[in-house]
Image 1 (cartoon, rainbow, N blue to C red):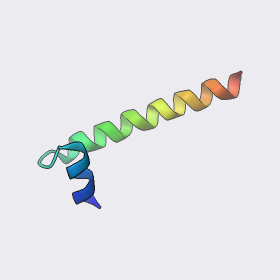
Image 2: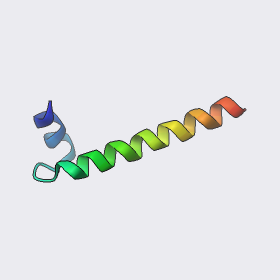
Image 3: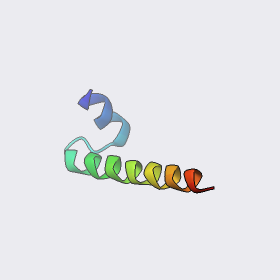
Amino acid sequence: MTALLDAHTGFGNEPWAVEVQIQRALRKVAQHVQLSERS
């Protein structure tokens, strides 16, 4: 699984960078869900 993530993101030697990207993506999704729930 990690190998797939590394190949997809290009951060093979920086697993923390993958974590940062995942956190950003989750934040964006959460904001989008909140916005759609309000309207």
